[in-house]
Length: 123
Image (cartoon, rainbow, N blue to C red; front, side, top):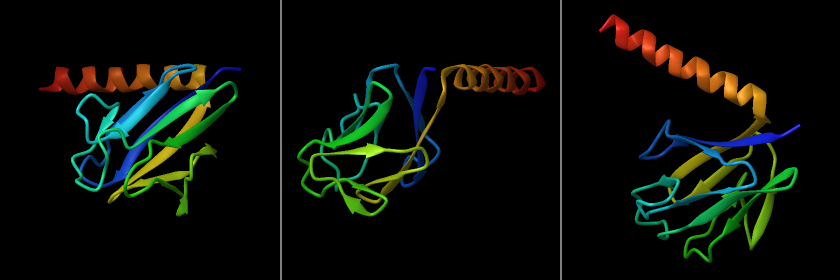
């Protein structure tokens, strides 16, 4: 069973932005516009932290940021294993980490695209 990770901004300047973590890949969070989730917050480093899949688990790595990365209000020294529902805190931003089976994630993405198509047709 392949797992797909997802990051959803729940508080902060980019509220509701989300990012799917590529299979066995990673997502970056920081001020840099090239990050998977770019956040315009002066408390963040250019690349503040990285969320990556390592086999059948996910982890967050702090990129030696000045203000730190926290998971469920606990500081991340170097890295920390994530479980679905964990809250990653960077600066004034809160990001919820979720994961699910790949087939369910793909089904939800298709439904989301279909909903957008329905909205476009009504306009």
